[in-house]
Length: 438
Image 1 (cartoon, rainbow, N blue to C red):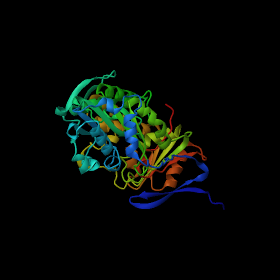
Image 2 (cartoon, one colour):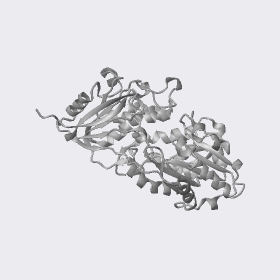
Image 3 (cartoon, rainbow, N blue to C red):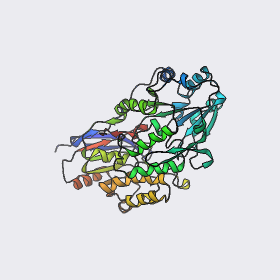
Image 4 (cartoon, rainbow, N blue to C red):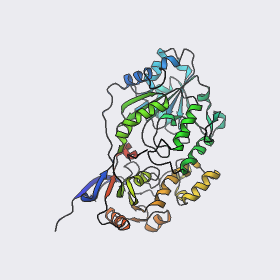
């Protein structure tokens, strides 16, 4: 009797290696990460980008001695990207010094939006923190905020007062896929980065729009609203980097926050997205850093799996879920939605967002995943949830083996030869998405 050929994937499963298999003859597509070599001289690339920006005047024409400079650092910037000697912070500070700007006139603002920021200082390191003033943005502290106007979508824009009162505002970020805004980078350093809670929540409610889809930007009201907010905050210069799987810089872009970001997107899509035709079934593993909790994959993996599948397709989410929902219950919903929130219908989530009942940031994360499980059957292959518990959250069921979960998805789509697409990322690659038209 012939043995069916399989494609094998070795993954971390509750801290232990496990091999998962898919039938090779049905596998039509796999999400792939394009790992590029790091720049030989990132500091030199940063300086060149600052002095030859895209669609904006060079830094030397923006600053003068005595100018108050705010440098906004996104919370996706790790210590490897921002704090090491030849990366980002040091070249920028040294260049400002050469242009006559003293360290005491520079403030680094940790642009964390409504995220927690327990490791902010570690990311920058003692040498950077010893040179300049450092402010951790707190979106809920109204004494930190200044009002700068309203967007055409009616979002009132409060931003960190240090940013509003600076003479020059420089943002530093990274371009990679994200939830409702489509991609990180560009104007996101302002909203949600240094915006007030009311501003962030008004923007996040737009997740309800059907134009908000994974990877979407051009008609995406969340992204367009963000860019208007960045205009109001007068973001002078934005520097965005692309990184490889080791979080080493592979490309640097700088300039007008719209133009440099859209220029960077061409290579970012080459790195992070895979061209593919939708398949009948998507099998998605959330990555070795996120497989122990069900709460992590709902924000990006489920919307990505939705885009990977046909309208009548099905999804298999494979993960240990050994910690159940995951997260830190003591931290409340600051780190994202809890299980009780995800048990709500998307309609109820929308109602609560509109009425500002609860944490809108967490609700909009939950909403991104819930609309998927309401639209398509999503089967869990996991250890941490029983079938009844999974169904109570809206999933189509929970099974103990990938083979059984795939069989259930195949039965649901009604085609024994149903095509399969797969995503088995490692490390930061969990943000991979299919390439989508926009």
